[in-house]
Length: 165
Image (cartoon, rainbow, N blue to C red):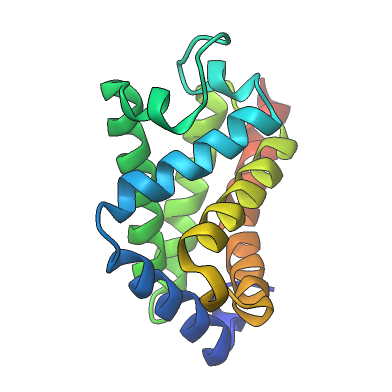
């Protein structure tokens, strides 16, 4: 499967739920904080991968009081939004962008596929908390498919680069 194989309903679910999220006040900070809080709790060693100390507190208020975390959180959500905006017409460009991002992640020391699963799970938790019942099982399934495609390009590049080390 590839981006061009994604059906309209799947893309529609993801884009509509993303637009709904964007309507929330400070959506980028809130979504990023929930995502990373869940990820750091589920897999504490990811803190170090993102340049944060292992003993950093991961409760909502502590994370929001950290300016560097807040900036990184907003950046992550912004990058996800940019990727989602490329869904549809130009799948070759999106594949190239995600492959380059996979290569960059290897250079940053993120070379374990498990991290992508933890990130995806954490993203879905954040979306579920912020969108409530609008993040229906169907919408979550659509997100799972799209996230899988986004990360598969990154993971493919990661595998190639890890083998070259």
